[in-house]
Length: 216
Image 1: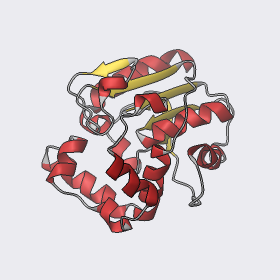
Image 2 (image 1 turned 90 degrees about the vertical axis):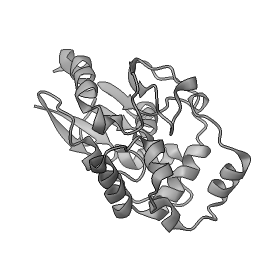
Image 3 (image 1 turned 60 degrees about the horizontal axis):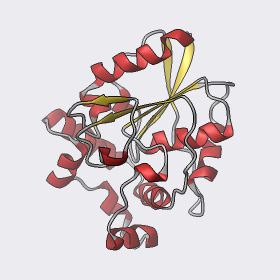
Image 4 (image 1 turned 30 degrees about the vertical axis):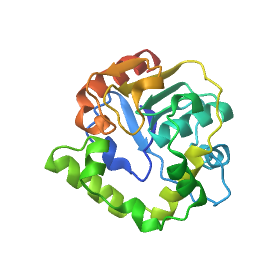
């Protein structure tokens, strides 16, 4: 049975993938390796690549993990690259306001800020039920605020304009974290939010199964 390597979203872990039902593969979660404050996305992707022991792997990346998947395509051949609720290039990301960008790039906000949850955050992620809110709260509580702060800065400074071939991009029409306006997706999930890999797992699973079935 082949492996499907999963790279989670910013501050998230393997729990966000737990409702996916992917046939005939082992889902292998890639943990976040140690980072250096001077790492850029491309440098950090090399550390992730070192955690994948096989050639021509299948990789599933969520959000920040999807951007890392794009960077992986520059470093190694992938049998299949699938990204969910993510972006393939800098052009697909909405630029933040100058004050938000300045705060994130300068990293002046304390690390605990990135671990806090509130009604605004729940709404932005699309966590509407108590189960979804508890999951998001738990994931953020267990995350490394310093890592999240570094990663947000690296996203803002991401310069990738290379559009890799044969990347399957699944995106939600109601995503507020990575708005759909500039996204060119392979599949759209109507009403899907940034948390749709969890709360629309059946639909996401069907697409992934379809995309990898001919490779198994």
